[in-house]
Picture 1 (tube, one colour):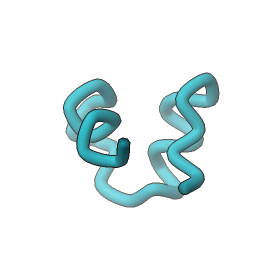
Picture 2: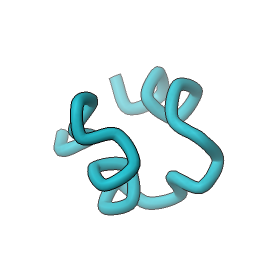
Picture 3: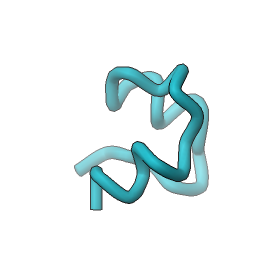
Length: 30
């Protein structure tokens, strides 16, 4: 699922930590 999130979230989401903040709904907390 992480791969999909990378495509969904912006390039700013380099680390999962940033993903969680960028997409609270798609918490990239795997």
